[in-house]
Length: 263
Image (cartoon, rainbow, N blue to C red; front, side):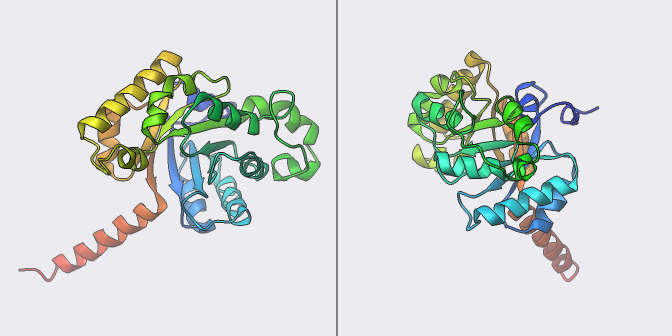
């Protein structure tokens, strides 16, 4: 059994915090077929991105269904902002977890956790939805959801780095997820992941996670980045995007064909 093999008994939240280096993938294209293909690869989870895409809640729901139909892979929905209504709607789709961008303080992390928890632990509204069989299993879902739903705040700014340990120590925060593009942009070294400012910031987040006993993950957009982030000590990875898979596959096929006509 590999470190990322899933067990039906474990929730995504348990997988993320168990220290077994779970692996995920990113879905941005809005294609249920692409989501279904990725979902069938026996990954631990798939992130449906509604921040940097034109996806509606309805479109995101179709992607969650596609991943669910493919096998045992769980789905996380990244909401556009740390907003209670956005979080509630994402979780009502049946997502196993929610990710929110640019969390910069413990108070913001507390608000995110509260939005993902039913009362008395939070403020998530209660209604029949796909997450509870459209009401058929509402009682069971209400009882189990607070312990099952994963909460993944993103660290994407200098302020987030500064308060990373406080964020990680918020009860209900399951991981810290570093957004490398936004963090490097905020630090003035966009895409320069070997720049001293970025390396120092990442080390500080890793130290914060270790101090709070919370895993730290990030996004790899190429095989080389998978190696690099692993070498830096990240606890888990989202190891690619549907857009990246398509681009690399198409480019490789084109380059291979063009090479047949080279000198």
